[in-house]
Image 1 (cartoon, rainbow, N blue to C red):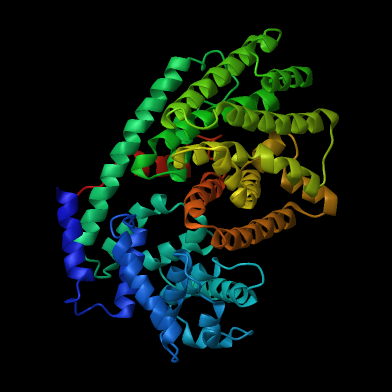
Image 2: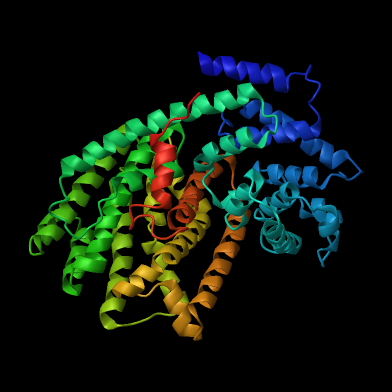
Length: 516
Protein backbone atom coordinates (compact mmCIF):
# COMPACT_ATOMS: atom_id res chain seq x y z
CA UNK A 1 0.00 0.00 0.00
CA UNK A 2 1.32 3.43 -0.94
CA UNK A 3 0.65 4.91 2.50
CA UNK A 4 2.71 2.25 4.30
CA UNK A 5 5.51 2.55 1.76
CA UNK A 6 5.77 6.32 2.28
CA UNK A 7 5.54 5.94 6.06
CA UNK A 8 8.42 3.46 6.10
CA UNK A 9 10.46 5.77 3.89
CA UNK A 10 9.98 8.67 6.33
CA UNK A 11 10.82 6.48 9.35
CA UNK A 12 13.97 5.06 7.80
CA UNK A 13 15.11 8.45 6.51
CA UNK A 14 14.21 10.75 9.40
CA UNK A 15 13.87 8.68 12.57
CA UNK A 16 16.68 6.20 11.92
CA UNK A 17 19.76 6.26 14.15
CA UNK A 18 21.78 6.53 10.94
CA UNK A 19 20.22 9.89 10.15
CA UNK A 20 23.00 12.47 10.26
CA UNK A 21 20.51 15.34 10.51
CA UNK A 22 18.80 14.12 13.72
CA UNK A 23 19.84 17.10 15.84
CA UNK A 24 17.36 18.28 18.51
CA UNK A 25 16.43 21.20 16.28
CA UNK A 26 15.85 18.96 13.25
CA UNK A 27 13.72 16.56 15.31
CA UNK A 28 11.63 19.41 16.70
CA UNK A 29 10.92 20.71 13.22
CA UNK A 30 10.12 17.20 12.01
CA UNK A 31 7.60 16.60 14.82
CA UNK A 32 6.10 20.04 14.15
CA UNK A 33 5.72 19.28 10.43
CA UNK A 34 4.15 15.90 11.18
CA UNK A 35 1.59 17.61 13.43
CA UNK A 36 0.83 20.35 10.92
CA UNK A 37 0.45 17.85 8.07
CA UNK A 38 -2.14 15.86 10.05
CA UNK A 39 0.10 12.78 10.29
CA UNK A 40 0.41 12.42 14.08
CA UNK A 41 -1.39 9.07 14.11
CA UNK A 42 1.18 7.62 11.67
CA UNK A 43 4.21 8.65 13.72
CA UNK A 44 2.83 8.73 17.26
CA UNK A 45 5.50 6.44 18.72
CA UNK A 46 8.41 8.07 16.91
CA UNK A 47 7.26 11.60 17.82
CA UNK A 48 6.76 10.62 21.46
CA UNK A 49 10.26 9.14 21.67
CA UNK A 50 11.78 12.25 20.08
CA UNK A 51 9.95 14.60 22.45
CA UNK A 52 10.84 12.45 25.49
CA UNK A 53 14.53 12.76 24.59
CA UNK A 54 14.24 16.52 24.07
CA UNK A 55 12.31 16.93 27.31
CA UNK A 56 14.94 14.98 29.26
CA UNK A 57 17.66 17.03 27.61
CA UNK A 58 15.94 20.26 28.67
CA UNK A 59 15.68 19.06 32.25
CA UNK A 60 19.30 17.84 32.52
CA UNK A 61 21.01 20.63 30.61
CA UNK A 62 22.37 23.51 32.65
CA UNK A 63 22.99 25.63 29.58
CA UNK A 64 20.29 27.61 27.87
CA UNK A 65 19.49 27.28 24.19
CA UNK A 66 20.99 30.29 22.47
CA UNK A 67 18.68 30.12 19.45
CA UNK A 68 15.41 31.94 20.34
CA UNK A 69 13.50 30.17 17.56
CA UNK A 70 14.55 26.72 18.79
CA UNK A 71 13.66 27.63 22.38
CA UNK A 72 10.23 28.93 21.42
CA UNK A 73 9.52 25.92 19.18
CA UNK A 74 10.58 23.51 21.91
CA UNK A 75 8.37 25.27 24.47
CA UNK A 76 5.31 25.17 22.20
CA UNK A 77 5.68 21.54 21.16
CA UNK A 78 6.24 20.32 24.71
CA UNK A 79 3.11 22.11 25.90
CA UNK A 80 1.04 20.94 22.93
CA UNK A 81 2.02 17.33 23.64
CA UNK A 82 1.22 17.48 27.35
CA UNK A 83 4.70 17.88 28.84
CA UNK A 84 5.44 20.30 31.63
CA UNK A 85 7.18 23.27 30.08
CA UNK A 86 7.69 26.24 32.36
CA UNK A 87 7.39 29.75 31.02
CA UNK A 88 10.82 30.25 32.58
CA UNK A 89 12.23 28.50 29.49
CA UNK A 90 11.69 31.86 27.75
CA UNK A 91 12.69 34.10 30.62
CA UNK A 92 16.26 34.86 29.56
CA UNK A 93 15.09 36.03 26.14
CA UNK A 94 12.67 38.60 27.43
CA UNK A 95 12.36 41.41 29.93
CA UNK A 96 9.35 43.37 31.13
CA UNK A 97 9.97 46.16 28.62
CA UNK A 98 10.31 43.83 25.66
CA UNK A 99 13.84 45.07 24.94
CA UNK A 100 15.61 41.71 25.04
CA UNK A 101 12.97 40.10 22.86
CA UNK A 102 13.26 42.93 20.34
CA UNK A 103 17.06 42.62 20.15
CA UNK A 104 17.28 38.84 19.94
CA UNK A 105 14.03 38.20 18.08
CA UNK A 106 13.60 40.29 14.98
CA UNK A 107 12.61 37.83 12.23
CA UNK A 108 9.00 36.96 11.51
CA UNK A 109 9.42 33.19 11.86
CA UNK A 110 10.73 33.47 15.41
CA UNK A 111 8.19 36.10 16.44
CA UNK A 112 5.37 33.86 15.21
CA UNK A 113 6.76 30.96 17.24
CA UNK A 114 6.83 33.09 20.38
CA UNK A 115 3.30 34.27 19.65
CA UNK A 116 1.99 30.73 19.11
CA UNK A 117 3.56 29.55 22.35
CA UNK A 118 2.12 32.47 24.30
CA UNK A 119 -1.43 31.33 23.48
CA UNK A 120 -0.81 28.11 25.42
CA UNK A 121 -0.57 30.14 28.61
CA UNK A 122 -2.54 29.59 31.80
CA UNK A 123 -3.85 31.98 34.45
CA UNK A 124 -1.07 33.80 36.25
CA UNK A 125 1.60 33.31 33.60
CA UNK A 126 2.33 36.98 33.22
CA UNK A 127 5.55 36.46 31.28
CA UNK A 128 3.67 34.67 28.49
CA UNK A 129 1.08 37.44 28.48
CA UNK A 130 3.84 40.02 28.02
CA UNK A 131 5.42 37.92 25.27
CA UNK A 132 2.08 37.77 23.46
CA UNK A 133 1.62 41.54 23.54
CA UNK A 134 5.20 42.33 22.47
CA UNK A 135 5.13 39.68 19.73
CA UNK A 136 1.90 41.12 18.32
CA UNK A 137 3.32 44.63 18.38
CA UNK A 138 6.55 43.63 16.67
CA UNK A 139 4.80 41.45 14.10
CA UNK A 140 2.45 44.26 13.15
CA UNK A 141 5.45 46.53 12.72
CA UNK A 142 7.14 43.98 10.44
CA UNK A 143 3.97 43.49 8.41
CA UNK A 144 3.84 47.22 7.71
CA UNK A 145 7.34 47.26 6.27
CA UNK A 146 7.44 43.92 4.43
CA UNK A 147 6.20 43.07 0.96
CA UNK A 148 3.73 40.25 0.41
CA UNK A 149 5.24 36.75 0.33
CA UNK A 150 4.30 33.38 1.76
CA UNK A 151 5.60 34.29 5.26
CA UNK A 152 3.56 37.51 5.27
CA UNK A 153 0.38 35.67 4.28
CA UNK A 154 0.99 33.10 7.01
CA UNK A 155 1.67 35.78 9.64
CA UNK A 156 -1.49 37.73 8.81
CA UNK A 157 -3.64 34.60 9.12
CA UNK A 158 -2.23 33.54 12.48
CA UNK A 159 -1.70 36.95 14.10
CA UNK A 160 -5.16 37.16 15.67
CA UNK A 161 -6.21 33.51 15.37
CA UNK A 162 -3.34 31.31 16.60
CA UNK A 163 -3.05 27.57 16.05
CA UNK A 164 -4.31 26.88 19.58
CA UNK A 165 -7.66 28.40 18.56
CA UNK A 166 -7.83 26.81 15.13
CA UNK A 167 -9.03 23.39 13.99
CA UNK A 168 -5.85 21.56 13.03
CA UNK A 169 -7.38 19.47 10.25
CA UNK A 170 -8.68 22.55 8.42
CA UNK A 171 -5.15 23.99 8.39
CA UNK A 172 -3.45 20.89 6.97
CA UNK A 173 -3.88 21.87 3.33
CA UNK A 174 -2.66 25.39 4.07
CA UNK A 175 0.48 24.07 5.78
CA UNK A 176 1.24 21.84 2.81
CA UNK A 177 0.87 24.80 0.46
CA UNK A 178 3.21 26.91 2.61
CA UNK A 179 5.74 24.07 2.69
CA UNK A 180 5.72 23.77 -1.09
CA UNK A 181 5.97 27.51 -1.71
CA UNK A 182 8.33 28.34 1.14
CA UNK A 183 11.26 26.20 -0.01
CA UNK A 184 11.89 24.89 3.49
CA UNK A 185 13.33 21.54 2.42
CA UNK A 186 10.35 19.47 3.55
CA UNK A 187 10.98 15.77 3.05
CA UNK A 188 9.26 14.78 -0.26
CA UNK A 189 8.04 11.45 1.11
CA UNK A 190 6.47 13.22 4.10
CA UNK A 191 4.74 15.75 1.84
CA UNK A 192 3.45 13.04 -0.51
CA UNK A 193 2.19 11.01 2.45
CA UNK A 194 0.37 14.11 3.76
CA UNK A 195 -1.29 14.67 0.38
CA UNK A 196 -2.34 11.05 0.09
CA UNK A 197 -3.65 11.00 3.67
CA UNK A 198 -5.59 14.23 3.07
CA UNK A 199 -7.33 12.74 0.03
CA UNK A 200 -8.13 9.51 1.89
CA UNK A 201 -9.72 11.34 4.81
CA UNK A 202 -11.50 13.75 2.48
CA UNK A 203 -13.03 10.76 0.64
CA UNK A 204 -14.23 9.38 3.99
CA UNK A 205 -15.79 12.74 4.83
CA UNK A 206 -17.48 12.87 1.42
CA UNK A 207 -19.06 9.46 2.03
CA UNK A 208 -20.36 10.63 5.41
CA UNK A 209 -21.65 13.83 3.83
CA UNK A 210 -23.63 11.85 1.26
CA UNK A 211 -25.23 9.87 4.09
CA UNK A 212 -26.40 12.96 5.99
CA UNK A 213 -27.62 14.66 2.81
CA UNK A 214 -29.69 11.54 2.13
CA UNK A 215 -31.09 11.72 5.68
CA UNK A 216 -31.91 15.40 5.24
CA UNK A 217 -33.70 14.84 1.93
CA UNK A 218 -35.69 11.99 3.40
CA UNK A 219 -36.88 14.25 6.23
CA UNK A 220 -38.34 16.51 3.52
CA UNK A 221 -38.63 19.58 5.75
CA UNK A 222 -37.50 22.36 3.42
CA UNK A 223 -40.91 23.16 1.94
CA UNK A 224 -42.68 23.02 5.32
CA UNK A 225 -40.11 25.15 7.10
CA UNK A 226 -39.91 28.16 4.79
CA UNK A 227 -38.43 30.33 7.57
CA UNK A 228 -35.65 27.98 8.68
CA UNK A 229 -32.06 27.67 7.49
CA UNK A 230 -31.21 24.76 5.20
CA UNK A 231 -27.51 24.37 6.01
CA UNK A 232 -26.79 20.66 5.95
CA UNK A 233 -23.40 21.02 4.21
CA UNK A 234 -22.27 23.77 6.59
CA UNK A 235 -23.41 21.62 9.53
CA UNK A 236 -21.34 18.71 8.26
CA UNK A 237 -18.31 20.99 7.80
CA UNK A 238 -18.81 22.04 11.41
CA UNK A 239 -19.08 18.41 12.59
CA UNK A 240 -16.03 17.25 10.62
CA UNK A 241 -13.98 19.97 12.31
CA UNK A 242 -14.97 18.60 15.72
CA UNK A 243 -14.08 14.98 14.88
CA UNK A 244 -12.10 14.76 11.61
CA UNK A 245 -10.48 11.38 12.29
CA UNK A 246 -11.68 8.68 9.84
CA UNK A 247 -12.93 6.36 12.61
CA UNK A 248 -15.33 8.96 14.01
CA UNK A 249 -17.96 8.87 11.28
CA UNK A 250 -20.76 8.35 13.80
CA UNK A 251 -19.86 11.54 15.66
CA UNK A 252 -19.79 13.50 12.40
CA UNK A 253 -23.21 12.21 11.37
CA UNK A 254 -24.81 12.69 14.79
CA UNK A 255 -23.46 16.21 15.25
CA UNK A 256 -24.48 17.19 11.70
CA UNK A 257 -28.06 16.02 12.26
CA UNK A 258 -28.25 17.62 15.69
CA UNK A 259 -26.85 20.96 14.57
CA UNK A 260 -29.16 21.16 11.55
CA UNK A 261 -32.05 20.58 13.97
CA UNK A 262 -30.55 23.21 16.30
CA UNK A 263 -30.69 25.77 13.47
CA UNK A 264 -34.34 24.89 12.83
CA UNK A 265 -35.34 25.08 16.51
CA UNK A 266 -33.35 28.30 16.92
CA UNK A 267 -35.33 29.84 14.06
CA UNK A 268 -38.60 28.57 15.60
CA UNK A 269 -37.81 30.37 18.86
CA UNK A 270 -36.25 33.51 17.31
CA UNK A 271 -38.30 34.08 14.17
CA UNK A 272 -41.48 32.06 13.82
CA UNK A 273 -43.08 31.08 17.11
CA UNK A 274 -45.11 33.36 19.37
CA UNK A 275 -44.19 33.33 23.05
CA UNK A 276 -47.16 31.05 23.80
CA UNK A 277 -46.10 28.74 20.96
CA UNK A 278 -42.52 28.30 22.15
CA UNK A 279 -43.66 27.84 25.73
CA UNK A 280 -45.88 24.95 24.59
CA UNK A 281 -43.06 23.60 22.40
CA UNK A 282 -40.74 23.56 25.43
CA UNK A 283 -43.40 21.88 27.55
CA UNK A 284 -43.91 19.17 24.91
CA UNK A 285 -40.17 18.56 24.70
CA UNK A 286 -39.89 18.28 28.47
CA UNK A 287 -42.63 15.64 28.42
CA UNK A 288 -41.09 14.07 25.26
CA UNK A 289 -44.58 13.72 23.84
CA UNK A 290 -45.46 14.51 20.18
CA UNK A 291 -49.16 14.68 21.13
CA UNK A 292 -48.45 17.90 23.03
CA UNK A 293 -47.61 19.81 19.82
CA UNK A 294 -50.80 19.00 17.92
CA UNK A 295 -52.24 22.39 18.92
CA UNK A 296 -49.25 24.27 17.48
CA UNK A 297 -48.81 25.62 13.92
CA UNK A 298 -48.06 22.87 11.41
CA UNK A 299 -44.44 23.82 10.84
CA UNK A 300 -43.70 23.70 14.58
CA UNK A 301 -45.35 20.30 14.84
CA UNK A 302 -43.25 19.07 11.91
CA UNK A 303 -40.09 20.44 13.56
CA UNK A 304 -40.88 18.70 16.83
CA UNK A 305 -41.57 15.35 15.19
CA UNK A 306 -38.36 15.56 13.13
CA UNK A 307 -36.41 16.24 16.32
CA UNK A 308 -38.22 13.54 18.27
CA UNK A 309 -37.69 10.77 15.70
CA UNK A 310 -34.08 11.74 14.93
CA UNK A 311 -33.03 11.65 18.57
CA UNK A 312 -34.84 8.33 19.03
CA UNK A 313 -32.89 6.94 16.05
CA UNK A 314 -29.52 8.26 17.28
CA UNK A 315 -30.21 6.85 20.74
CA UNK A 316 -30.92 3.43 19.22
CA UNK A 317 -27.65 3.64 17.26
CA UNK A 318 -25.73 4.49 20.42
CA UNK A 319 -27.37 1.66 22.37
CA UNK A 320 -26.51 -0.75 19.53
CA UNK A 321 -22.92 0.52 19.54
CA UNK A 322 -22.81 -0.15 23.28
CA UNK A 323 -24.17 -3.68 22.63
CA UNK A 324 -27.05 -3.09 25.02
CA UNK A 325 -24.80 -2.75 28.06
CA UNK A 326 -25.15 0.15 30.44
CA UNK A 327 -27.91 2.75 30.62
CA UNK A 328 -29.85 3.85 27.54
CA UNK A 329 -28.60 7.05 25.94
CA UNK A 330 -32.10 8.45 25.38
CA UNK A 331 -32.69 10.07 28.80
CA UNK A 332 -29.35 11.90 28.55
CA UNK A 333 -29.88 13.04 24.96
CA UNK A 334 -33.42 14.15 25.77
CA UNK A 335 -32.25 16.15 28.80
CA UNK A 336 -29.69 17.94 26.65
CA UNK A 337 -32.47 19.13 24.34
CA UNK A 338 -34.70 20.10 27.26
CA UNK A 339 -31.93 22.23 28.78
CA UNK A 340 -31.16 23.83 25.41
CA UNK A 341 -34.81 24.69 24.67
CA UNK A 342 -35.40 26.04 28.17
CA UNK A 343 -32.43 28.37 27.64
CA UNK A 344 -33.90 29.40 24.28
CA UNK A 345 -37.21 30.07 26.01
CA UNK A 346 -35.52 32.40 28.50
CA UNK A 347 -34.12 34.41 25.58
CA UNK A 348 -37.55 34.46 23.92
CA UNK A 349 -39.10 35.83 27.12
CA UNK A 350 -36.40 38.53 27.31
CA UNK A 351 -37.14 39.50 23.72
CA UNK A 352 -40.92 39.66 24.14
CA UNK A 353 -40.57 41.65 27.37
CA UNK A 354 -37.97 44.01 25.88
CA UNK A 355 -35.56 43.05 28.63
CA UNK A 356 -31.82 43.50 28.09
CA UNK A 357 -30.00 41.42 30.73
CA UNK A 358 -26.66 42.16 32.31
CA UNK A 359 -23.71 40.40 30.74
CA UNK A 360 -23.49 38.02 33.71
CA UNK A 361 -27.21 37.18 33.43
CA UNK A 362 -26.86 36.71 29.68
CA UNK A 363 -23.87 34.35 29.92
CA UNK A 364 -25.39 32.33 32.78
CA UNK A 365 -28.09 31.35 30.30
CA UNK A 366 -26.13 31.77 27.06
CA UNK A 367 -23.53 29.09 27.75
CA UNK A 368 -26.36 26.54 27.65
CA UNK A 369 -28.06 28.03 24.58
CA UNK A 370 -24.64 28.00 22.85
CA UNK A 371 -25.37 24.26 22.09
CA UNK A 372 -21.93 23.13 23.31
CA UNK A 373 -23.34 21.14 26.30
CA UNK A 374 -25.89 19.57 23.94
CA UNK A 375 -23.29 18.61 21.32
CA UNK A 376 -20.85 17.34 23.93
CA UNK A 377 -23.21 14.46 24.72
CA UNK A 378 -22.78 13.05 21.21
CA UNK A 379 -19.00 13.49 21.38
CA UNK A 380 -18.86 11.61 24.70
CA UNK A 381 -21.01 8.74 23.44
CA UNK A 382 -19.08 8.56 20.19
CA UNK A 383 -15.70 8.32 21.93
CA UNK A 384 -16.62 5.96 24.77
CA UNK A 385 -16.64 2.25 23.96
CA UNK A 386 -18.67 1.25 26.97
CA UNK A 387 -20.97 3.72 28.71
CA UNK A 388 -21.79 3.00 32.35
CA UNK A 389 -23.14 5.16 35.14
CA UNK A 390 -19.55 5.41 36.38
CA UNK A 391 -18.19 6.66 33.04
CA UNK A 392 -21.01 9.19 32.81
CA UNK A 393 -20.13 10.40 36.29
CA UNK A 394 -16.46 10.63 35.31
CA UNK A 395 -17.41 13.07 32.55
CA UNK A 396 -17.81 15.59 35.35
CA UNK A 397 -14.00 15.75 35.28
CA UNK A 398 -14.19 17.95 32.21
CA UNK A 399 -17.45 19.80 32.89
CA UNK A 400 -15.42 22.97 33.43
CA UNK A 401 -13.95 22.58 29.94
CA UNK A 402 -17.47 22.14 28.50
CA UNK A 403 -18.52 25.34 30.28
CA UNK A 404 -15.51 27.33 29.07
CA UNK A 405 -15.88 26.01 25.51
CA UNK A 406 -19.53 27.09 25.69
CA UNK A 407 -18.59 30.63 26.70
CA UNK A 408 -16.08 30.86 23.84
CA UNK A 409 -18.58 29.50 21.30
CA UNK A 410 -21.32 31.82 22.57
CA UNK A 411 -19.09 34.90 22.28
CA UNK A 412 -17.73 33.88 18.87
CA UNK A 413 -21.32 33.44 17.69
CA UNK A 414 -22.21 36.90 18.99
CA UNK A 415 -19.13 38.39 17.34
CA UNK A 416 -20.25 37.12 13.93
CA UNK A 417 -24.01 37.63 14.18
CA UNK A 418 -24.60 40.76 16.27
CA UNK A 419 -24.64 43.21 13.34
CA UNK A 420 -27.25 41.23 11.41
CA UNK A 421 -29.30 40.55 14.55
CA UNK A 422 -29.36 44.26 15.37
CA UNK A 423 -30.76 44.97 11.92
CA UNK A 424 -33.46 42.30 12.43
CA UNK A 425 -34.22 43.45 15.97
CA UNK A 426 -33.41 40.05 17.50
CA UNK A 427 -32.73 39.31 21.16
CA UNK A 428 -29.78 41.19 22.65
CA UNK A 429 -26.34 39.59 22.34
CA UNK A 430 -23.45 39.75 24.80
CA UNK A 431 -22.16 42.83 22.98
CA UNK A 432 -25.46 44.70 23.30
CA UNK A 433 -25.83 43.65 26.94
CA UNK A 434 -22.39 45.00 27.80
CA UNK A 435 -22.89 48.20 25.80
CA UNK A 436 -26.03 49.02 27.79
CA UNK A 437 -24.67 47.80 31.13
CA UNK A 438 -21.47 49.86 30.96
CA UNK A 439 -22.66 52.62 28.59
CA UNK A 440 -19.79 51.99 26.16
CA UNK A 441 -19.38 51.83 22.40
CA UNK A 442 -19.69 48.66 20.33
CA UNK A 443 -15.91 48.60 19.77
CA UNK A 444 -15.22 48.70 23.50
CA UNK A 445 -17.79 45.95 24.09
CA UNK A 446 -16.21 43.75 21.41
CA UNK A 447 -12.78 44.24 23.00
CA UNK A 448 -14.20 43.14 26.34
CA UNK A 449 -15.66 39.97 24.78
CA UNK A 450 -12.26 39.25 23.22
CA UNK A 451 -10.66 39.50 26.65
CA UNK A 452 -13.19 37.01 28.05
CA UNK A 453 -12.42 34.63 25.18
CA UNK A 454 -8.66 34.93 25.83
CA UNK A 455 -9.08 34.29 29.56
CA UNK A 456 -11.39 31.34 28.88
CA UNK A 457 -8.72 29.76 26.68
CA UNK A 458 -6.17 30.19 29.48
CA UNK A 459 -8.50 28.34 31.84
CA UNK A 460 -9.05 25.58 29.27
CA UNK A 461 -5.27 25.16 28.96
CA UNK A 462 -5.03 24.72 32.72
CA UNK A 463 -7.94 22.28 33.11
CA UNK A 464 -6.87 20.20 30.11
CA UNK A 465 -3.47 19.62 31.71
CA UNK A 466 -5.11 18.27 34.89
CA UNK A 467 -7.00 15.49 33.05
CA UNK A 468 -6.09 11.85 32.64
CA UNK A 469 -5.07 10.61 29.18
CA UNK A 470 -8.49 9.04 28.54
CA UNK A 471 -10.35 12.18 29.57
CA UNK A 472 -8.06 14.31 27.40
CA UNK A 473 -9.12 12.35 24.33
CA UNK A 474 -12.74 13.33 24.93
CA UNK A 475 -11.92 16.86 26.09
CA UNK A 476 -9.86 17.71 22.99
CA UNK A 477 -12.89 16.99 20.78
CA UNK A 478 -15.11 19.13 23.01
CA UNK A 479 -12.50 21.88 22.74
CA UNK A 480 -12.74 21.52 18.96
CA UNK A 481 -16.32 22.79 19.26
CA UNK A 482 -14.93 26.05 20.65
CA UNK A 483 -12.37 26.14 17.83
CA UNK A 484 -15.14 25.68 15.27
CA UNK A 485 -16.78 28.71 16.85
CA UNK A 486 -13.78 30.74 15.72
CA UNK A 487 -13.90 29.11 12.26
CA UNK A 488 -17.61 29.65 11.65
CA UNK A 489 -17.94 33.18 13.05
CA UNK A 490 -14.55 34.80 12.45
CA UNK A 491 -15.71 36.60 9.30
CA UNK A 492 -19.44 36.89 10.06
CA UNK A 493 -22.25 34.37 10.34
CA UNK A 494 -20.88 31.18 8.80
CA UNK A 495 -24.28 29.49 9.06
CA UNK A 496 -26.47 32.42 8.08
CA UNK A 497 -24.70 33.45 4.85
CA UNK A 498 -23.94 30.81 2.23
CA UNK A 499 -20.95 32.43 0.60
CA UNK A 500 -17.59 33.91 1.48
CA UNK A 501 -15.01 32.28 3.73
CA UNK A 502 -17.07 29.31 4.89
CA UNK A 503 -17.89 28.35 1.33
CA UNK A 504 -14.20 28.57 0.39
CA UNK A 505 -13.24 26.40 3.36
CA UNK A 506 -15.86 23.80 2.43
CA UNK A 507 -14.59 23.76 -1.15
CA UNK A 508 -10.93 23.12 -0.31
CA UNK A 509 -11.49 20.77 2.63
CA UNK A 510 -14.52 18.72 1.61
CA UNK A 511 -14.75 18.95 -2.18
CA UNK A 512 -11.44 19.43 -3.97
CA UNK A 513 -8.80 16.67 -3.64
CA UNK A 514 -5.10 17.49 -3.75
CA UNK A 515 -3.27 16.69 -6.97
CA UNK A 516 -0.47 14.23 -6.26
